[in-house]
View (cartoon, rainbow, N blue to C red):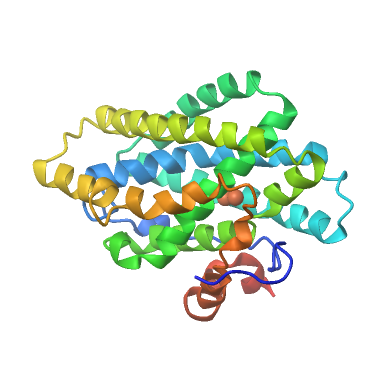
Length: 285
Ligand SMILES: [Fe+2]
Ligand SMILES: [Fe+2]
């Protein structure tokens, strides 16, 4: 990883792409490595996206005209468009998962209740701060997904396409909410406090949602699936250990999301993975 040298602002053009993926081609509900725990974990995450990403948009919107930076204003527009499309695509994916046996739309309702409970307790400033934190978590997750492809092997093709596109756009817009928050409030103490809450709350909720999906599906994990999931999440080469140093970075007093320049993932995706057949706008042009 290289460090950005110029200004710590989003170096990329943030614009929404109207993608569509063939989820119906999914052969099994256990779409990730034929492991119900790994699959339910990703499905649980996907359950949070439709309303979670809508919340990102709602938390940014009240301040979008307060920035004095015209570039940031444009990027906010792109950010809102991208998150709206992520919501839509994950909603479609979640419906396909229900047809396969995991009732993710039912879980979306559980998450919405949890989200509403949290929002009620936050001011607009705290909502934006929380969005900044979750955007960082999402960008770190996205970077891991793109950087350690071998650990994500065994994903059904259409889901891999969905996650790859989502990861790329999360990297593209990773500093938009941060830059807006810093310009309007500049309060790093609240960011750090919010991140501590996010690091406890989110893993707890994902685990709870994962268990619910399996319970509703009456799917008991085999011992080999438990071992596979444990290795994937908490093993020596596991996701938690890989992500930890990047999460720690957030607590630095001079942290900026583009301290780590991972824009090459976006270029690589555009050059070798991006499929214009899935891009409705490109197809129509
Ligand atoms: Fe997103
Ligand atoms: Fe995002």
